[in-house]
Image 1 (spheres, rainbow, N blue to C red):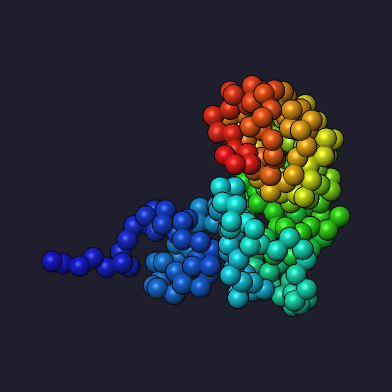
Image 2 (tube, rainbow, N blue to C red):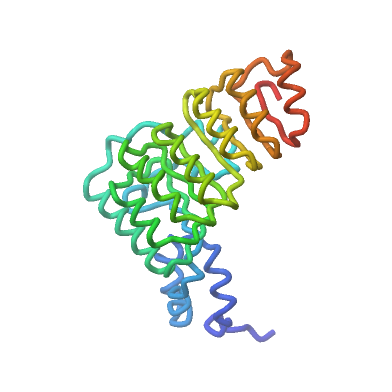
Length: 269
């Protein structure tokens, strides 16, 4: 049987495949196979989904990447504090890596997933917002400084097509929710991983995101009144995960309010 030359694979097929292999392969492997593969890596369509599973400052990390569908056991392995072993050089290397990947996309990025231990610099989110207007999915690191949290809030205005956000901080979150409500008409999935979700944030979600389809609070403690606010306000919820909430089984009001939700996960479910 005659074997086909990989070098002759049509460029549109290469681009379709390279868009799924991950940015590390796009940088470290694919360009060195042959000239046609090298040329294909310059197509912006290869760089639409940027999942930073590794980076120059995270080469030895064994932690999984947090995705919106991540299971509870995987996330519990991720550190939610600032890693102290990151060097200034590593931070700069990661920043350059992010800029390189986004530059290759020429504004076509639709998804950015940061590793939970990624350290972002002030101004980096604002820079990304200016160059990624088509963003639909954003998964943020576990730790963001006070300033960067508000950069996220302000940057929401640039992402008209944003559909899903995962965040692990309460700082600036009410402003973020308000801007999502105002600017992101397609938004439908919110994941918040914080120690305690207070009633103020619950009220913001209930009153400003009534069309939310999926709400993931599996790692956040939420009190009964806050949960009831959300159940009453978000009438279109299809999936709700409040795995740290206790007492649903004996709470008839919550059971009744949640009866319309297709997937309702809580303690003991």
